[in-house]
Length: 516
Image (tube, rainbow, N blue to C red; front, side, top):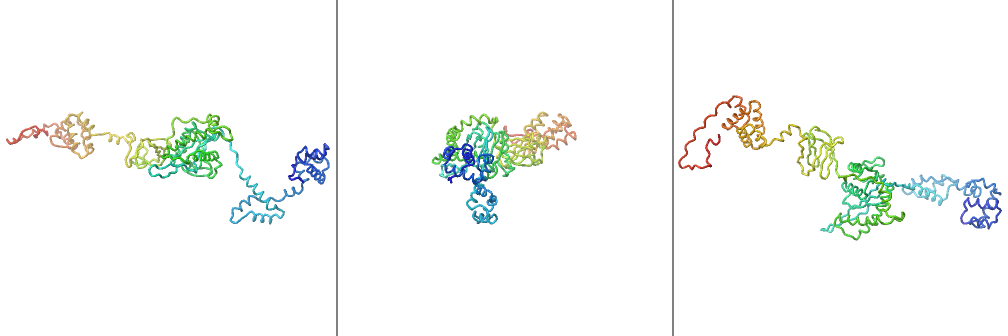
């Protein structure tokens, strides 16, 4: 018998040439590329199976012909196959081996396969189970992002300490065009910042961004409905892309970046192993040089470089970048207090007073603080890092609070001066008499409003009498006007006593007339 069994196509050809064309064994062997012994064995098997002419063979299907010529093989194929799923489950249990499972299989199926064939069937099942679907990436469709497990490092110039940093990698699906950079951490600002710099490097944005379920991007890890981090979702909206988190523990969902990370490790990190950098900026400068070399190297499969493929496929299909780069901001939840301010990292920011008690969202960026209610911005402030202090916009205050805030000593004195010099003098005296000027605001305002009831002329006369009497309050002026004392002549000043002859007379000596 031949060392390797002939295929049914070759068997049919041998029988056709022998019985239909009448050719010799050697001629048939030369035609089909076999041996004369194989031709003899095939004809003998056909006759033993009751097949003596080409007409009897021509109508048989390949499987039927095989069953007639090789009955032992057909019998073997009819043996009960082992349950490979059961084998796989049982192997997870402690102490269970394939040999033990084969014995249990034979106890159930007495005519079953031998141990070698049993193992081969299980191995074939395992290979089929691990088949991966070939992904086809359209131009401009997806960007794959991830961090490298192997990390670059920088060195502390003063202490000589080795500090590990992160390596961020982004790969375009269609062209394999790659971006890489080092960052201090994997936290939100670095994560978002790397995305914005990757989009700028590509010169556009793909329809979707595929990421692993990392904490800075995904708040709730889930196979079916992962929860996106709000700032990450906001960034995607700003750039007009969609975030598609890969399933947890499924690297085949993002094979492009998995391979991209490996290539970055081999062609970037490996080149950096003997270099010393003292800052992330210095390290990124070197990574940028190596990245250009990587993207310009011809790929073994495509025979062109990543950059050439990028220019042909991805670049024309990328969505344009927005006019402004995304600004990172952190979100928090707050309640508007009774003083119409919300607290954010120890500082208080005002909102319109009509929103007292409202639940709002606060977005803190590097230089600004924004307050949102039902998705609508209701306040914006320059960010302050002074804890316990307030940032208040006058327009957010009630009218009464705003009016009180607008008063100042100079404004009150100027208003009093429009009535008369004695009214101005009394206002100055009241404000100077109080420990704090604001304590005299109410007295002055009350006096000034008396002019609406009694007229400016009477108020001026009343203030003159109050000054002469040494009065410094609203009640005194009101009493003078109420009793008509403003119309009475002022009392004559007392005669100034004669000074002793020894007393020197000079400009610094003031008499009672000065205080009138």
